[in-house]
Length: 83
Image (cartoon, rainbow, N blue to C red; front, side, top):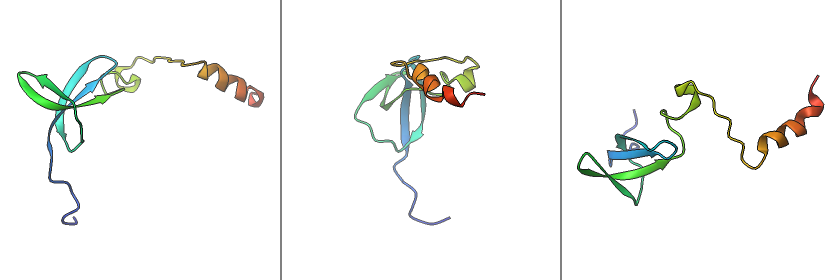
């Protein structure tokens, strides 16, 4: 393994899934300006749109999120290739 290429500033960071408000702690070097209090301790906060607690692959629940008709637009665009 090469020396001197890995970061040295690992620290405990709180990651928050914004879709279900789940918070988990792990070591990271991610830069952040926000903090959150977890179990009486203050940690740097990184906000996530999706994590293992809300991703359909891990939860087994498929969600269909259609923003601004993207799915219909896609289906119409590729309907001509249907057999």
